[in-house]
Image (cartoon, rainbow, N blue to C red; front, side, top):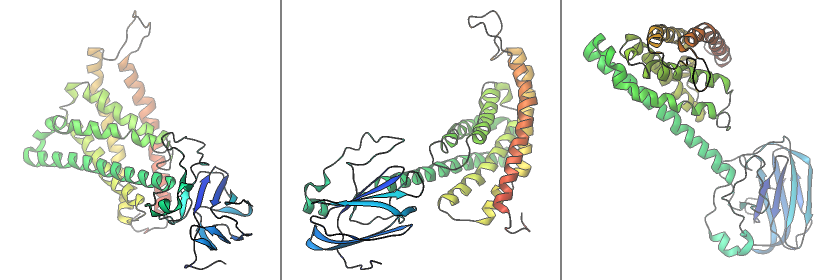
Length: 369
């Protein structure tokens, strides 16, 4: 094992594909290197001319993921030593080393950098070897993979915190109005917090894109149907029918949606920081048991109450003849939505949440779960 914290380190430039890691070690007239490779660690030692003249240069890399320790090759030239190391799994690494803070002597090899799924157009290759003394004096920039990973983390923190604040604001306004006016506040709820609710609900479409872009884990269909279902109620059934906006059921549906979200988003924040708060986890995977069925019941009431309004106004309906030669009856669609989408949708959502709850709370404080 090569262990010497006082040893000189050469400049090491790295790049990757889905299959391999390449290391370019800047040592002129290098001797045959001493290499020790394990599944997660790569150690190098060799004599040669580096930034500090002719000396013995050593370094150790603890990789972000595992490699095939026996499947690497290298070649020595007059100016460098190049390694090609095979990854254990064919996938893109967000950074090379396990620790968030990379060594100061480790740089990106822009000449070899390749991204198979996305090409970084605004990053131009740079001649990093142009001037050793000038390069060593610069502040080391963050690695591309580490920067991307932290940018995603910052974005997710900002998104979840913003959504939590938005729904908390809705709850506070509703609570203040109800405390002041009692049930007389219910007809004014949509006028008071409708814009905030629409903004928060539109933002939730980002949650459909998060797993697609790799920001979060999980499927796409379930978030898509949940967001589409809520926004159908909010925009098609409430926003576009003013007579529905003053009904008491709007107060209850906004209350239910907000109560769910002010628990969900703080839970997501704790997951970003890898901080497990059992009470919050238990609430996240328990409050849906009463709230989801009541919320779906309120959505059904909104659709039923809207049926005579849409039959009267023919809003969204297309009657023949028309230029498109298409017939569409919105009240009929609303009835089909109730029969074939809400009821099966309720079963799918509840069963999905029940399975998730079982996985999250299994074996944890059974007296609470």
